[in-house]
Image 1 (spheres, each protein chain N blue to C red):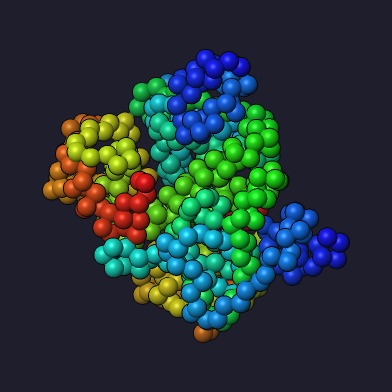
Image 2: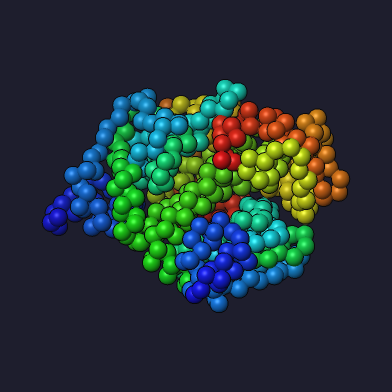
Length: 238
Length: 238
């Protein structure tokens, strides 16, 4: 595998899992093919055999589960740089949720379970990276749980917006969230009406909404409003 | 390392991380020393350098964090078979919470970060096991998040009790939870009054409380009451 191919992989498929050790993936370049899914298309179903780990190159995915008594819950919203389907790391595992595309097309890079497990056995560096990403995921879920009792609904929405901005970002930022309001509300653990009220409350700290476009006029101001009530105090972005 | 020593390790320190590959740990037996901490003793502090991964052999630990505006949050309750301090897996990481002993003494087995990282590089089998435990941890946190919106307070308390019973347990079980009520309430994301009301509600499905002893008269009945509203539908125990 020549240098051009390695670069091609890391440029074509920019993702935290690939960026750290692009040379590991180079021999598998021909087997790593980006797939494009259309809006509302189902990528995988809860209970399917976990045949691949999915990296999100662009677009938005909604991860859902259903309770036996018929409620649909949104367990994840994934966008660029996220991954889902970690069950593929483990033999005979099944996906613990369904994944559906939100908004316009999504570009995904599925890493076949067989390649993934082969590489993990060969390369401790990749194991370390996967563990780090899993640890971040756990920390995020635990922090989100903490926020259910320590943050107001408006602060929880603000935290979600800050996560969509880049690390250490400053100033103004426009964000597009192509996810229906009731889905976003469910994901944030609130009712749709509460989400609407929260959006209005965030106006006071300079967040305005026009359609699916959300403008944060001052990331610093939003961060002050949210992170003072969080035990991470903004450290989640470092 | 002879067979006796290997057995001694796995018998003396029964834990999901050690049980799978006791032979990996055998060469480090002399460096793996159980430590006993007294009630209310602090094991580690939020922000300390993560020098060890801690396995809980017996007893109860409360993991807490503080928000800048002064609220204390309970991010974890650990007991036999749990682990905490996974930050030790990563270089230069710090503990993301403090850990304090609840109830009577706790027996802990700290695995020094240096030994852990050395073994992880040498042994893909150990990496796989750690990833599996981390994945379970993430799944638990995500499920707990889901429960904040899909389960009632009484069902969330019921779910916590079921987790303390053994996998596939049936019939009657008496559980001791040596954790103050307001701590348990914070951990479950509810107020102390709500926890009291929830305990009363659970009487109707055969859960009675006397002091710190909680009797589940029929695990099956409690499982029906809780798991019908959960997307895992009891699968979390498998």
